[in-house]
Length: 291
Image (cartoon, rainbow, N blue to C red; front, side, top):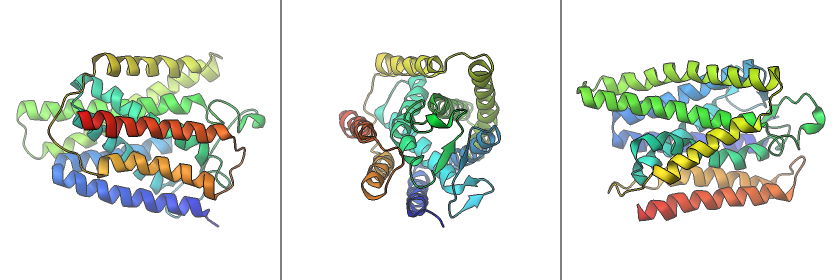
C-alpha cells in the first residue's frame, strides 16, 4: 500500500516538470536540455547515494529500481527554477551557482525533516544509533545531506553555466544546446562522487565532526551572494512557473503536517517550515520584484 502523501507528491512533481518543460521550451532548446540534464543528474546521484548505503526509499508508484522517478523529477524542477531565479535577479555570473545552491537548500531544510516522518518514511536514513532517527543531525536528517544538496546544485549549475557560456563565446551551432547539458552531467557526477567520498572518509572514517562540512560551504555561499551578488534588473519576467515551484514544495510539506500524523513530530518543524517559506517568498516576491 502506497502512502497517499507519496502519491500526491509524485503527481505534483510530474505536473511541475511539465510546467517547467513548457517554460523551458519557450526560452529555447538549451534550457530544455538543462532541465532534462537535471533529471538525469538527479537520478544518477540518487543511485550513487543509495548504493553507498546512506538511505533507502519508501514505495512510490513509479520506481526505477530502488529510486522513485518523482525524486529525480523533483531535483530537475528545483535546480531549473533556482537557476532561472538567479538569472532573473541579475546576480553577478560567478555568484549565481552558490545562489542556486542556497535556493535549493532553502527547500530541503523544510522538506527533508517532514518527508522522513510521513508513513514509514519517504526516505529512511541509516543511523548507527537507532535512537537518533528523529533527533540526530537536523531533526533526524544527517548534516551530510545538506552539504550534499549544496554541492549537487553548485556543481551542476557551475558546469552548465560554464559550458553554456563557452558555446555562446565560440559561436557553436544549435547542436551545442543539446550536447552541453549532457556534458555537465558527465562532469558533475564524478565531481560530486569525489566530494562525497572525501567527506565520508573524513567524518565516518576519521571521526571528524560533520558540521564544519556544512558550515564552511554554507558560509562561503552566503558571503559570496550577499557580498558580491549585486542583484540587477534583467527586464525578462520569469512568469509564474519559477516562483511556483519552491512555493508548492513548501506548502505541500506544510500541509502534510496538518493532514497526516508524523512520527517524532515537534512544533519546531512548523517553525522551520514557516521560516523557510518566508525566506523563499522574500527572495522570489521581494528581491525578485525589485530586480
